[in-house]
Image 1: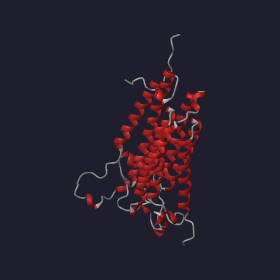
Image 2 (image 1 turned 180 degrees about the vertical axis):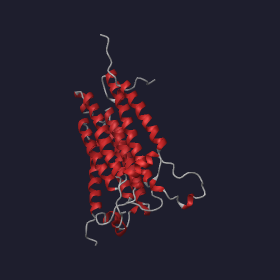
Image 3 (image 1 turned 60 degrees about the vertical axis):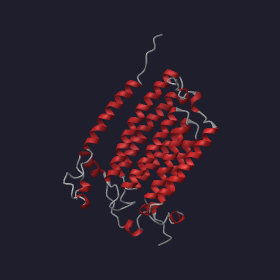
Image 4 (image 1 turned 90 degrees about the vertical axis):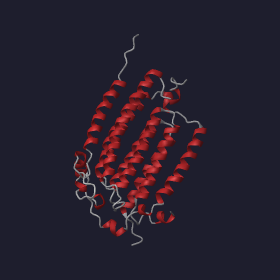
Length: 118
Length: 198
């Protein structure tokens, strides 16, 4: 693992480096979703998670990172496009729900959303 | 050869550092407006990573749809709800401890797993320099229309299946467009202004 980092500047990067960046984005998004009390902060965490997944899809499909028969090829990019589109739709709906919650409860603290609690 | 900098790797390092640093900044910031700004920078750096991986069309879409559309939507949400008491919302410190414990464990699993696959280590320098860059917008558009121009030759291990070639993504494309229509109508209905009787 140390060897892989040693010649990072002189050698082409591979799928592993991209997957590492994706893992960091995913973890940040996951912790954002778990710790933020602001509902919009939770939404931003979801965006970060989706971006980590997108980065993985692009990396697995890229011929410049791994050029053999097991590469995802263009499928990775197509799936990433669908993820981007669905993330836009998800953000629109989630924002509408958050605004509705804000109008009804006068708060965007997710801890206050306990009306359905038994 | 050993001392010359391979510039794509340098730009990968730059974009990756920016993306990760601003993602951590999103996590650590308590001010919601600053979080939105850091998220814009992180997603833009991710678009740079897409360009570096040869996905020029997806990178452009990332900039246009994500940074230009989704995040503007989020920032509008921030502006509509940013009362004084919601701009800064602190997380309980016990939550931070648990979060960093779990996040650190997740990273300790994921990063060694990524580097444990020898095929993922990257191309050789000579192979990488001899590659011809080709743009992806046309194959992507044809794939969305149902014709896979990138897979005209069937791989040899699939010869026994006499079905059609790779079917393309026309059906998924249609489903997602109808989905977008339904979602946007639903969102507009959900977020409509209520007239209070008073």
